[in-house]
Length: 133
Image (spheres, rainbow, N blue to C red):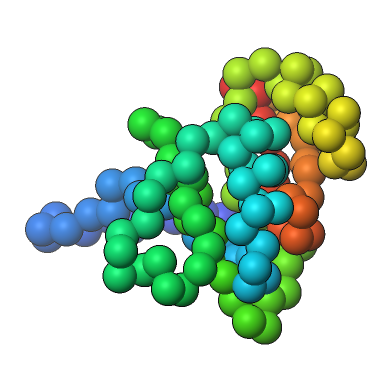
């Protein structure tokens, strides 16, 4: 059976969702150094300081002008193997080569809407999709 998608029009538009502020992924307690190596060094994201009142929770944040990934430490951590962040990339082939050189296994995915894409797991098993627009 074909699924249909209906757009619901609201007459009263006093609110609307306008975007995503950040993506939060879980990491195991004590995984910050491995997270910095993957998100900071391999992906090239800048680490952002966490607010002082959140430091005691562990984890770390990576942010650019257009992207925020917050990594939260969880005592009963389980990786997100299906749910994932999809990151836009310039120079996908170069990034893939860097990831493979650093020992990360990259899996090619079929192009979607004419865009090249791959999957890689972060050091904790969280699936990350990389897409070249």
